[in-house]
Image (cartoon, rainbow, N blue to C red; front, side, top):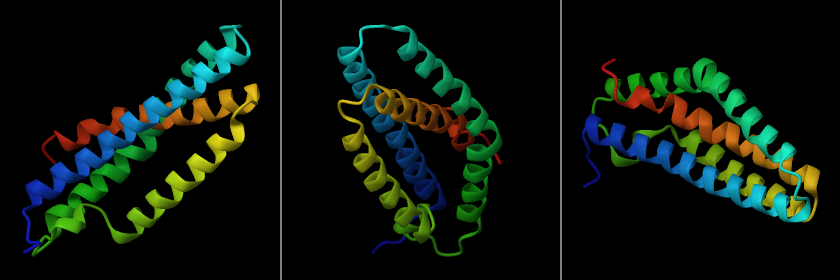
Length: 141
C-alpha cells in the first residue's frame, strides 16, 4: 500500500526541501516588513538580507549539499522503499522541532527591531541554503 519507487522518494524529498525554502522566504520577508515598520531605515534590512544570502551560500556548499547527497544515496540503497522513507525518521522530528522553535522565537521577536532583523537573517540564510543545495536533486549521482 505504501510501496514507492526511489524516484518518487527523491521527488518527495525535493518537495520537502523546496517547501522549506518557500516558507522560510515568506517568513523572513514578513519579519523584514515588520522591522521596516518599526524603523524605516533601510540599511540594516538590506544588510540582513545580504548577510543571510552570504551565510546561506556557505551553508549550501559545505553542509546542505552533503546532507542532501547523503540522503539521496540512502534512498538509492533502499531495497523496498516506502513512502515515508524520503527522509529518516529523526529528520522529521528535527524538522518539527525547528518549526516549533522558529515559530516561538519569531513570536518573541515581534516589536523588537534587533530581534526581527536577527531572526530574518537566520531565515534568509536557511532559505538560501535550501535553494542553493537543491540542485543535488536534479544531478545524476
